[in-house]
Image (cartoon, rainbow, N blue to C red):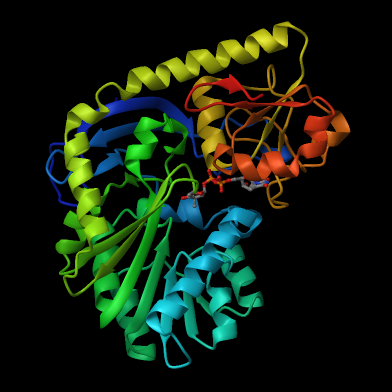
Length: 411
Ligand code: JHZ
């Protein structure tokens, strides 16, 4: 494991305690083009550590964000019906509960292709997206969502506030995990938020990651893995409070939505979550101590399951050229000797190859064209949606394999 010389991204403690090493892996979203196939993909150490001081779980390596999110970033939020529905419901709830109207101002950080903010447009609410990825920002603008193309922090918050006034609502979904200068990011939110405004932040819950063996959601884009306790400490440092928590067990393997404001109004639900984390031991190193062993069992279990199927003459494909798919394939060591191809709906990913292992990515229709015997679900977070969509493949006898929490062939 790399030396935990870096300070905690939240509290600055230099006492980080590593508990999982996934070795050196390529960048999970750096899909490989046909021309790059004969090159060796760069790899970086992927080690995870716990901060005993503020409880934040984080990786030790830091790849420059420009390399991750600007040069060839291919993640578009709009390819999941589940996520689109979840985002629409989020917006409808905010409009109704906070009485948002034409005089309101909503900012989304990491607004991607406008998948969420566009739901405010029919309500006449003024919106602004902030996202450094150029293709996604362009797609958002085409959908009618004004978007500035940059990384967010205190400096950009001041500029936005000077031009548009304070934000009534700030939304930051699946971005706080990605931010190296965490205190600048949260400080920026505090700077931009109106005194009576609301911030909602969504991110997978580190408890679910550990409990369900979701080690593949660890990759270089994800610097931090949050609990309510670590979020509470982080926002208090910036004069804000974790006032409410919602839980979405089916989103990205278990997602929390934290409601943060400048006035302390802690709900019973938030207190229950904080107390529950303490009682479960999530605030101590012990909770993470045996995780590496469990991850190793998933690796050996999945490898031997797929090797046995292959040895029996079966053909195997995979579903989802997700970033987590890249961690899974590279850590378990699954290449073209076992997996013929990966399918993905995202047209930007099709025709490319998974990093490191160079398994080709094809359109989803390839499942019916080739009818492989088994499909390893790399995007297991969308399992229900995928199973529903792939009824014909299953009716014809195709079977799905789920890698986590325990590798298994689905009935
Ligand atoms: P998906 C992403 O991780 C990216 P990834 C990011 N780093 C993050 O924080 C987490 O989400 C939360 C495809 N697909 O979303 C689309 C189909 O082909 O799990 C995607 O390429 N058909 C910001 O990359 C991939 O699967 C479908 O029916 O691990 C899923 O990737 C569906 C539903 C998806 O994310």
